[in-house]
Image 1 (cartoon, rainbow, N blue to C red):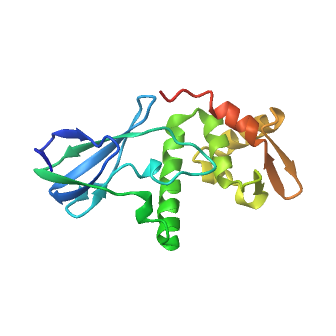
Image 2 (cartoon, one colour):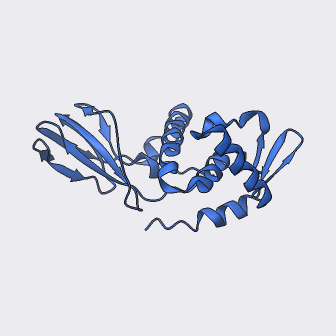
Length: 187
């Protein structure tokens, strides 16, 4: 049991906790030092932990993220063992959790990479296992940047041979994208 007084902080260190009493907020600390505060508070009965590394995304590697918990009032956290085996076998729950993680991961990509890296990482998430994306799925609004910025960057990515357009598809050079994204130091 971890007991926290108001404003007291605790690092989860890769563990999962059930909030037995109180109310907390969490902050995700990225390897590059950036901190992302989560907008919602968590209350009694809710679970906290690093779900990003729980289910791996086969298209994109996410660096290790530290999670800091700050108590908003007197709080008690109880550690519990939560493993991937608890989910394997329940396909619907596994897919649901995977989608939630994927959705949340997109929020972090903007903090991890420059704009070029961010666009490439998002494109990888949209792509199938062969690195192909139907053109109709790609719209500047999906990338949280202006239309002019997106199309300027997209043209530059084509010139640099990170991707090419063919009929109704965008084809990614996944190896080249991976090499570029690996240049970013997360440690």
